[in-house]
Length: 134
Image (tube, rainbow, N blue to C red; front, side, top):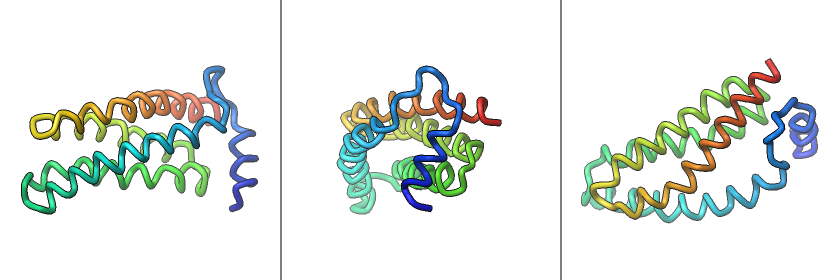
């Protein structure tokens, strides 16, 4: 599938009135991925160096896997329902991550706030898109 095919398919989907233009996703995710790189890297380093228990890294690992899985589900398989399930996993693991890391590094928890806000919005958007295109 080419990027043009993906854009054409996504453009044909019914979307709610609050759906942002597709060009906004790239810049938002670019900023979020920088935050994710720094904060997740800090968590993984502390876990690998045995400063923190491995269970602290678990929600970060699940979140990363689900985050990576969204694009192939949504745009590769063109499966809105599986993408919806996936984004709800991403959302729930962000909350889990924040709770797990807070006692050890509150700044890592605070760093997830923009990610939580965006994924909350994206979840509502995905629910709407899935509903409108069932």
